[in-house]
Length: 384
Image 1 (spheres, rainbow, N blue to C red):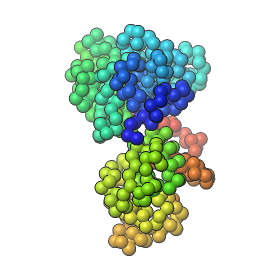
Image 2: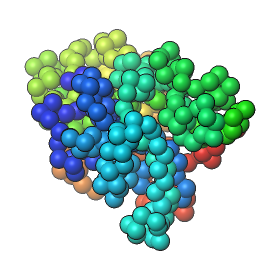
Image 3: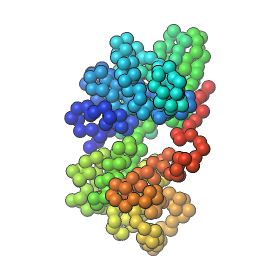
Image 4: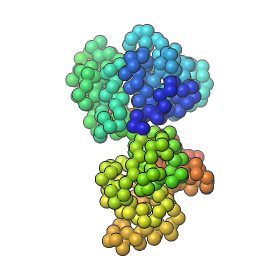
């Protein structure tokens, strides 16, 4: 399976299942709407004041006939977004809607999220295709900007610009796009003063979904693949015993390869942003694979097995002439996983995928109740 969606193509799932879709599936669904010509609306969180379930950049596709895919809140605004989407499609124009989710809010929801959320709703059209590109097309990522508020009559809400060449690149005038920062990491808000008035831009860096490479083809790999895929990872499974590493055995993997351990680097083409988990349960295979991975810039390497097994791996690598330095030890997680206490296959898989997510998000995986800061990583949300 190489599509970003993770769906079977048998039609829209129920609303609950669609609400859980990771961002990569939302983008893939939007591309399918564009390809089919079916009318739909793209809803994007562009600002949050206070606390909310989703952060800026979260997206949802809302379609009159097939429902929604993705989420911009915990589901409390689904019906309101559906009604607003009908209006957007009828008008053919984008709009910015503000949802006050505090206890005493104008929407009467009383959901108590303690935040105010701005959602941009846009008719889905070809100008969105550059920011909905597949992982293979995104390469290192793109910077995209869209006008979410405008006092300038020459700049419409929904006018956008993408740093890659596209039909969308001419929607915003040069004096506005000149203010878009080139070093955005995540999302930002930019307010630009033009001759016609103030324009507020939502800027985001669109990047490929993170990749998890699982080395191994035993039955315990499958739960890791399933959970990682549901969490939004692109998953590559690498097996060293040909008959066991097949797409039929791992249907939710994006890619399945069967190779010799010594060919690992050539077959996978690792990037520093990748995460790798070694779980072949074969000491010789893990020894060779670990040596291959440590020759790359990969920043997370999880190794299945108890501490004494890893010490034997380390000694074996040293006998091969590869001494682990401090940098190597810092990126190796052995034993792999967070200490969740479970022992069943899916409990172990949760431990592994949770640790990968924590490292990806620069977190330690501790209890949220022990933290006095925000749940989600935040920037100041502004740029001048």
